[in-house]
Structures are given as C-alpha cells and as structure tokens.
Image: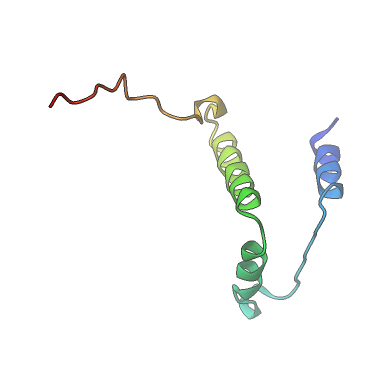
Length: 80
C-alpha cells in the first residue's frame, strides 16, 4: 500500500473530523485550543507521539531510539 493510500485510509477511520478555512493572518488560535481541549488525554498523547516520530524520520534519525531511558541500575533500601 502506498503512503498516499495509507494516509487516505487513516483519515477515513477518524470519527470526528473538524476543519476551518481562512487566511492564516485572519485566524487566531481559538479553533486549535477548542479542538485539542475537546480531545481525550490519550488522543492528545497519541498525536504528540506521532509528531515526534515524524520529526525523527524527517531528520533521518533512528526511530527505534525513541524509548524509555533505563539509566538507573538498581535501588537499595536505606539502612536506619
């Protein structure tokens, strides 16, 4: 499946699709704020993660590096 078809298929599965048209200089941020505040926290997180993955790909970086860092080796209970 080509990227264009995948994009169309993904858009077709959206339940709510909201659109606003106009000149950029005439539009304010109220539409964006209203839209994102109406979304669930999970939907907002998913959208943010999608942008992070896209940015990594555009920069040519390895997407597999996007994972939790495991810098703590172990915990020990303090004596006392």
